[in-house]
Length: 244
Image (tube, rainbow, N blue to C red):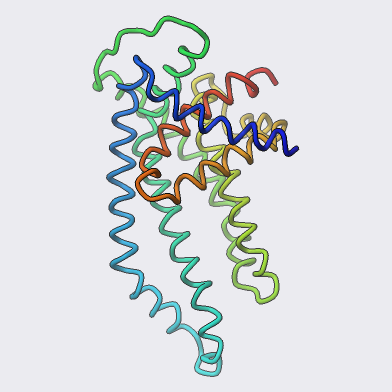
């Protein structure tokens, strides 16, 4: 289990190396710019709206619970930051999904030793928009399905001590699905089939997703998380998932 977990982490580092390769670099530019733009806006929004949102959360407390405000403050702060992160991560991946699918395709060709076709320009990428958005929508539905349970765990005293672990596990699993979906989707696999493959390699999946989660929390470096994760997820697909 632990060996597989660290193998999964390694795929993110492999992805970082892959996005620098000649023939792959042109397909990295747009996902990178989208990620920078969306998360720059998310950071600005978090800084400008954080105080107001905290006031609203704490304002919902009845007066007789005011004495626990100091306990709930970090919990509400975590909820706000997690909510902002996940909302903007979904937006960024939805916008970039057609370009991420093409990036995954080129990375897979490189890993399989196939000749790289000539870059035909960014207009050619737009042909994949419809297919990519449908796939992204299926992932979003699956992700939203688990949020109510996590929110319940987070707000119930006593049980909420496991909330950070639950959110971390959730984030790792969802990001593993998010970024392996691009190469698997290129092979006409859908979320239900993708989950079967990921469960067969649960340790590697959580290691990969956990590494991506950590990378997204590091300022500046997190701008490169999306293309690196797409490339790393494709390497994971080529090495393991496609052979299951």
